[in-house]
Image 1: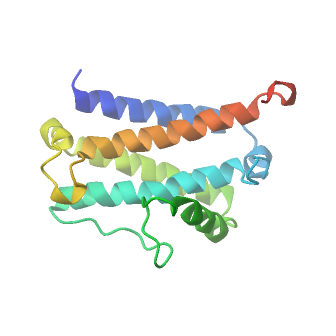
Image 2 (image 1 turned 135 degrees about the vertical axis):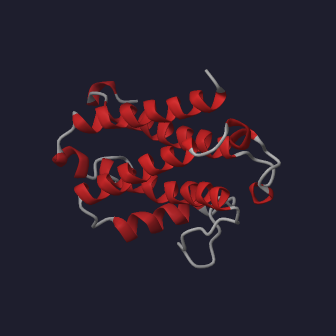
Length: 170
């Protein structure tokens, strides 16, 4: 199996894992703000979807041979800059908190599938070449997928930790 196939397979597996969890969870559970941060599972999915848009912007830019055009979020804050992500995440929560669960899920799911399809469009060489896209500043497109995988997995792990029976919670 090529590295590209391995990366995309891992992304499909994390999508399946999320879908499995969400499929076994009622809408009431999904929309209840029961996490320690007062977020709901829906809010986590929205959070993943909004950050996913930056990854999609990178992949589309690479396909089109241009620099990425990122979604505009909080004026004056540069995402992925040390110390600002908590403020951006708070903005995401406040901005999208009234999105319905079906809208949130559809946006995230469609974005995830689009992100996967974009990855399939690249040769393995282009996906792994850390020098090809100067605006990636030494990172490869594969790193975008690995970062997205890690982000989704991080939130799955937090969700599982939270969903344990109350007597088992740390």
